[in-house]
Length: 441
Image 1 (cartoon, one colour):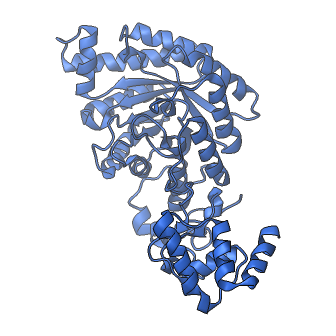
Image 2 (tube, helix red, strand yellow):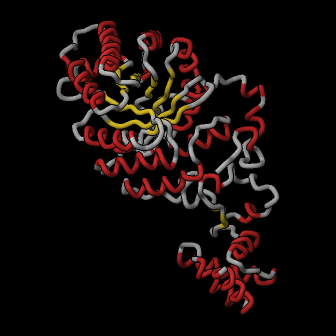
Image 3 (cartoon, rainbow, N blue to C red):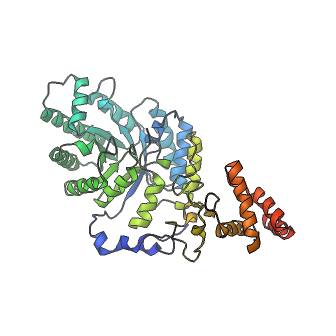
């Protein structure tokens, strides 16, 4: 579905405030030329508690991401034995999907059981290369993480300077080995960057950029340990050091701020955001795909390439595959995302964006009136109109009373069939005839 973006969409497809596009606001941001959506549902999403997907399910998710949503980049796991079959199956699909899709598989093997060393890391890189997937290597940046890993390597007596140097050397060795193995996309993930020594973080970024990393991700690891503005400032600091390498962000939703911090990173020059369908991931998850795409397209004006009209459909299907209920109140794609209860929300149809940021239909969703506290005649008449029923003014109150009885005793809104029955009983045969004609029209 074609749609407008950014400033062009205001009062047509979106209700975004024009102030978002004033020179005073835009001059405070260091926005990149474009932002790449990197979906990591097939890696981080599989860390959702209770989830164990087989290769067939992973391929189905890949099909939805690539064919339905037009996602340009996907990330898989690469560090567990069961990942190998998934990588092969997804690679086979991608080879026949009809377009180029960037890929990466994550490995944090040098920090993992049993060996915690470079040899183990390179073994994993070799497996990823053999399966034809790109590479993203996780390395530690904060002193706490470096010292935490050191005890598993019997390096407790090493100085922090030596541990830092070793970590840079590991990253460079993994990059060189990945290139030698013919991996086209070789990326680095800087873990716990918010708590890293700033000078070391800058040094590390420049070193791996000079070595030719395609993308350098800043991974906040814990999530919720800094205000969004710090993400912006750090990306501004790292941007001049990154050279030809793109900067990316991997943010966690532990404190409910992942989408905000990812967008703040974009304001500092971040060019790649790792996202997931419905934000699925370990704990409360990570950056939500739909929320991020909405903000990038309509708040910032980027063309993400994502097929917005498919987002609700895909969100629901992947929720089913993941054995998760998509909560009704999920922003943008949930059943109730564009359901408005208070009667004043229906009083100004000539100003559709007073209470909603964007047209629901753009994301494959529907706007409709609902019933709860403070229901009133405007919402009631609109709901009835949608069902082909005309409600005379003198019948509004009796019909509202009937709806409120349903809310009081059933603790839910009436179904369409129940509403039609109420209208027929209160308004009379005219309502029954109009409703029947609408339901068969």
